[in-house]
Image 1 (spheres, rainbow, N blue to C red):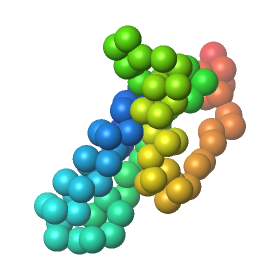
Image 2: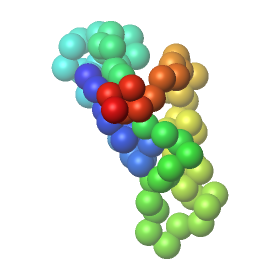
Image 3: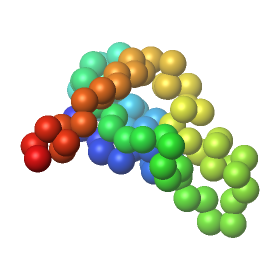
Length: 85
């Protein structure tokens, strides 16, 4: 599963995906044993919490989820758009 712009999503969405995949696959492993690729830039938009404070946005961020400790971060180093020109 590829989840683009995940950084704008509420942590509860990630946690709901985890529970759903576990239920559907009958597998108690994280994400039901499925590889999930989360793509996004945390320096950009965080989740929008109507009438929320910055603290509310941080609490809603994916990095605040207990699942985040199981994420293996990978970084892209080469700007491919520059190489196409």
